[in-house]
Length: 89
Image (cartoon, rainbow, N blue to C red; front, side, top):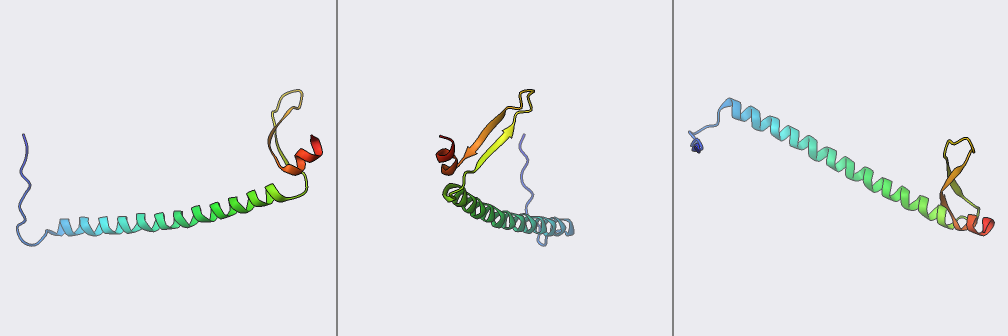
């Protein structure tokens, strides 16, 4: 069974105005946070680009490893730049 939408009766009630006011404030907060997140995402992308540029072009050997934690003290190479390739290969 469907219900008919109530027809406007003139001025909105105080409850409706309070709801709309609260909704507008919440939407403003959401949009503000989205703008802030966009700024942070751009900053992270810029920092990542700078890191990648330095990592790929520095002449020194750079190797990132992760200790596996085993009894044999083995490590896993996570990343190595061109300088490490020249040094170890």
